[in-house]
Length: 325
Ligand code: PEP
Ligand code: MG
Image 1 (tube, rainbow, N blue to C red):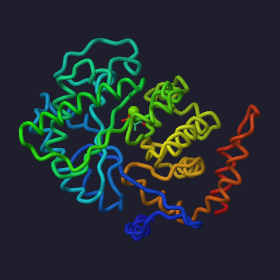
Image 2 (image 1 turned 120 degrees about the vertical axis):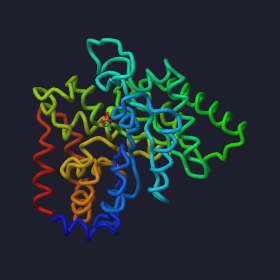
Image 3 (image 1 turned 180 degrees about the vertical axis):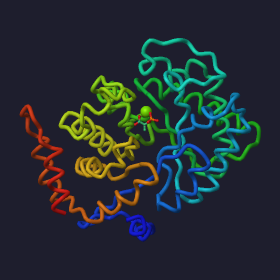
Image 4 (image 1 turned 120 degrees about the horizontal axis):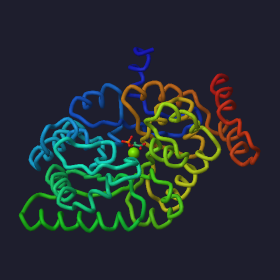
């Protein structure tokens, strides 16, 4: 199997009926980078910048951040990299940062909330990203966005940092794109405004499922209770793809389900044409896509998504479809 996947490394993921699917990799540390070429990923769809902060014993200074981001861009070459700004707070506490005890850390003071309330930290990170991105395309993504105004506030901080770099004579990135994670259900009801405010979006299905089903992703008693391959969740995801397509904004999904063949099948069925996953999943997902006929998949899936019975039967139907391929 592994050897078989290695043979697919240089092959683009194109379905039997000619639909191209972009397969990217999730990363967070320098040790992940060799996997880019090994797995045949087209880019880094999600770079989790908080990992550098979580493995450090003191707050990484701006130079250390700049060095890491520059190394990632250098190692990626022409492959695009999407850096997500710090997703800390809540359960991801930094030992060297004063934390406030929270009864519900997943619903707490974290990610972009912390970034906007403590702008010095977010601005330092944006400054490091801009320095590291000199001459490159720089893609920045905001975690846990709940209201579109948060993106506008972050963009104002970004504009200030670009201006600061310009004033100090630093070479700027060739282009800066600002995107948002879609992982808080409130965004599903602001999709038009969201799409107008961003250059791209990426669905964080781990958190979106957690918040949509009110089930703690880290609690084994409930984490796998609700199948993401379900009518309610797939409809939610499809609404995001539809809004992004209508606005002409690139959309991808970077949660764990992108790396699970049956779930990836469902994602392609509802319109995703780009996914980001762990490096180890790229081979198996590509093999699945190369054997796939999307027209046939849609003939099966679309009617199931349109029904309104108590049971949706989607997971079983997809299992049967995959077995027949
Ligand atoms: C997600 O929530 O799906 C996601 C990709 O981000 P993280 O797992 O880092 O919260
Ligand atoms: Mg998340």
